[in-house]
Length: 220
Length: 102
Image 1: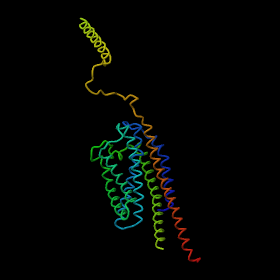
Image 2: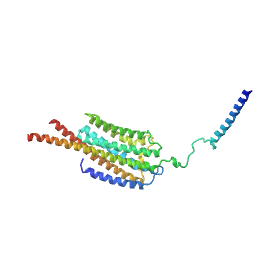
Image 3: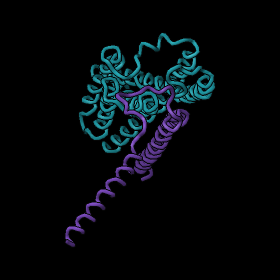
Image 4: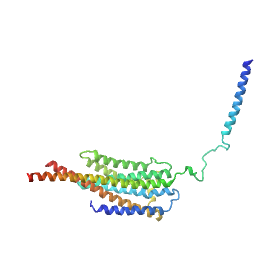
């Protein structure tokens, strides 16, 4: 990844994040949930950023498995870590909304359980990369593809099963007053995700360079 | 004779005790008729309501904290790797320069 990409993307995401609260405060209150519904403007984009990171993880894992490109593997590791971070944002902001809207922090229904399982798959990916030893990169790549395959099921889970979670089909039909802060936040989260990905990739590149240097020293 | 009198005093005492306790228990009972089911309420009392604002602020603060915290961990790791990289590169340079000098 280019060095110049991070300052540009981080500056852009900062702009989005500074303006987002103004738009969110100006958005109307939802009739049944009231003020707490505004958590949605950060909760939904956090999941979307996680899905983006998982798609990057899945595609780069596939490229690494079939073409053996080390750069694809480095991108996969960076994306997996980001997916865990954004997933954590979604898993924390959800119950903060749930305690007010449902009266409980958590419900083990299909949607919420699938979200936890997906987060655990990503944590498993990182643990495998950290402690798996030789050959774990290819095993982890398979796990990355598996994580990507889970995303569509998670997204449509509220349409298939009866869950307490609001349906995802409400998002495209949102009135403009609700839609503007949501899409603004979503773009902010996507830019933040790409910005963090660029700097995280740089870390992987530097690590790869260090490994090569150690190998060169040992060969001498 | 004394036994009979003692028994009647104890019996009288028990009756008085029962009457008093009945009074006390009666006072503790609700005066309204028992409800057969749940009765809907127009509005939740303020003491039962969860405030939404702290939850909203907490959600946004956690998102910011996670993003900034994660960026900080990347910078820290990057600084460590770059330092190690510079060390190893310097050692390689030193090793390469030894035969030339010797």
